[in-house]
Amino acid sequence: MDKIIIDGGKKLNGDVHISGAKNAALPIMVSALLTPGVSTFHNIPDLVDIKTIKKLLRNLGVKIEGESTVKVNTENINNCEAPYDLVKTMRASVLVLGPLVARMGVARVSLPGGCAIGARPVNLHIKALQDLGAEVELKDGYVDAKAKRLKGTTIYFDISTVTGTENIMMAACLAEGTTLLKNAAKEPEVVNLADVLNAMGAKIIGAGTDIIRIDGVDQLHPIEASVIPDRIEAGTFMIAAGITGGDVRILGCEPSHLDALILKLRDAGMEITIIDGGIRATTRKKIKSVDIKTLPYPGFPTDLQAQIMALMSVANGLSVIAETVFENRFMHVSELMRMGADILIHGNSAMVKGIPKLKGAQVMATDLRASASLILAGLAAEGKTELSRVYHIDRGYQEIEKKFSALGADIKRVSG
Ligand code: EPZ
Image (tube, rainbow, N blue to C red; front, side, top):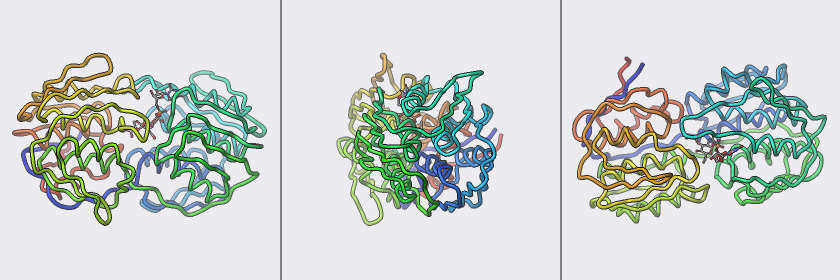
């Protein structure tokens, strides 16, 4: 198995180009299922999770061509099952449920099973689909759903759920009548998907707010569209500039998607400047500790919690980091402590006492964002860090070690 070896202590300097957003590309590629024909999507990142969604779609009879520009041909869907072997590797596979029931009238989708960061059930997806009139049965670890035609209604999500909102928003596009989604997720990826669906002929208003209205239509048509930049990748590189005392221009990102992080990094003493084509993140003085509470968008993203914890582990002072979205997203803490970090977990909060310097060590990735946090820690640490289980990082970051070494980091991948 590959490992990533980092020799830390180098200040990062220069430009990095941000790839398309994984969490927008996945639902957008799936949305093509809603209409027969060939849809074209641009700015698709080169990630393991994208390869998985392609496998899943091909398994349904979809023809797919291309890498950064992908053509999705949904003329001949000949299977409506998402098998456990694929779904267990990527929970977002559950996104095919809504579109298949809406267009094909039937779907059989494996339940995703457990995840390192939390139980992550899909009960809200299922409840909302039942509210739209689908008959749903849970059998042998699968969700069996069917409906002649879904019927619009008012749906309230007990918890703001990103893929839940996306799944049901897609299904409601072809329902009879009007659907209101209340306490809907407001993430930029949800808005990107709604824009793509509206380009296909859907009637969606209110995406980006917590009430989304969808007036169902009889059919949609294929389109050509682009995926937004990855705000989590951009945030990871901004924090990398901070933890190495560097000066980095993050190009091709959308600054308005990163407000919460920008404000926190400024509070921590970094200079964050909005520039043409992106953001400049500069560190001129020692990082100060700040408190963080993760929340659904526009709150501080849970997908940047691990990365900012690495930064706070070398900040001046004590910071409290509260994780309110997932119940088990502190797997990186014990690995950071192997590098000398001083962190105490209490319930869903971590008290991080900043230390002058981390020390390189052998550490293990446990999930996608935890592995990003360990790479950041390795970039700042004294000596060598050896990160194993790097398959986690390849799920969500395109050529991360190439991008960091272009900024002056001493980082390489070695095959095990
Ligand atoms: C999306 O996951 C992202 N994944 C996650 O990114 C991200 O961490 C998460 O949103 C929160 O921002 C994709 O978009 C593919 P949720 P999702 O449903 O939709 C509970 C990454 O690193 N819940 O918004 O699965 C759930 O357990 C990944 O790129 C239910 O209880 O997250 C969690 O506590 C990791 N029942 C909370 O809601 C449900 O039916 C929010 O989860 C659905 C969710």
